[in-house]
Image (cartoon, rainbow, N blue to C red):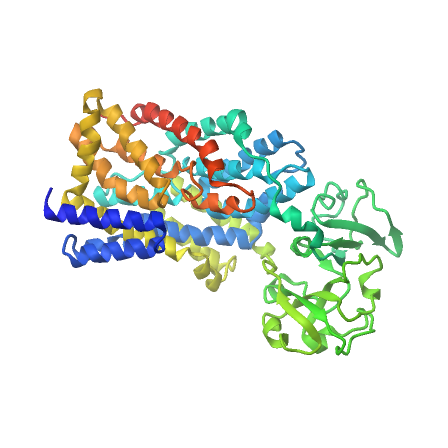
Length: 594
């Protein structure tokens, strides 16, 4: 090897060690490695920075905005809370998750899909006394498996697609091309989880359950508007008996009080529903269109104006001028530009209507406020404590249909191939902002900039491996031991190396580093390159044996109470199983010879 090749290998090895030891963030590691290689003259500056204009990288960024718009409009939330429905058993829950997560993650970024469904799964498990550890690892695995079915299912596919275009402009992937193996992947993986994997899963009590008794319980009175989706549904059918930590005390219907409330009771327009519940369930109630707090006329109902309001918790102090007054009589709008949503009192369940509650020192109020309430009243002697409620910003339900239509048009454009993938993604993202499904500020914040920098900068390292001859040398290490058994053995070696690498560093980085090595390996054995590149794309996503191998694993690691060995025990057999599927099917769909 040349001196440049040795230097490139040394820089790459140091970068891998930094990632494994977590000496620095991945974006800093790869950006630093690319800059060093450019300064040493191993790659030109233009080639070192080429990843920042790569169509695959740009498409990943645009799809972050599209997914955020679907989340902000409540589209993903609507899907998520209907995933498990009335399923009661663990196996039924896994089947329902499979039916929703696989197709959803085939067209959306995996991370927000899993982030959205983690609380849904935890709530469902708590209601049925099932440990969340029985379903959260399968949730993460299913999202990965679904992502292998389409070009846009995971950023890894888009990165490999971008590398293929950079190598040969006519060689990019079509929308469903990788699904030729990705779909069997998903079927085999699902069968493994249902028949074998779930028997290897641990059963642990989640930390949230251990702390559940200490959670504050509020009383809240909600008014059912005529357009609310709960109208004409039974209490059980509307899911109001299934929200954890929520209890429907009574229904006030034209002055007639219905209590206790039977599961078969139908909800009517103009009903006033009195609940007790923890703050997270009150937030869930407030996000249902047409269901609004009934006690305070200052509460903003219009979707456009509600976007500028937040939920805050405030503890009343003895010096407040409202002590002793009923909430119905207190003018929170004039004093604090706020509206009362719910009340909590010293761990005691309040059974009276919220408007009739006389305020006492120590009462905790859940308030709908302006965006600066917390900062303005943090030192106000009227309150002991003021804090914002995380995740309380209202959703843009009135824009949900627009977001859904734009997303369908995006998929249609990609499927037709009449519009470039990156152009279609940016057009959809721009229209999401233009139609106010998402604000420009939220669009910028939705993009995972460190991930994009990591991907773009790692392109420079991959280019250096190819230009310096280091990739050819590394490919030789894979080809020589396997050459006697033919290209299938070499393909198996490339897949296995990528799979092992992606368990220790990011999946996108593993794909970029292995891309030039796979190219050189194919050329060394004298066969078409496409089977090897597809193997890299599939193997880089198949990270099941380590919680650090894929970002969705870290989302379920804490809530599921998992240990590192849980992923090894459940994921390693799946890795080996899919390795066999890939080696068997890739040569069939992408032959070694033209």
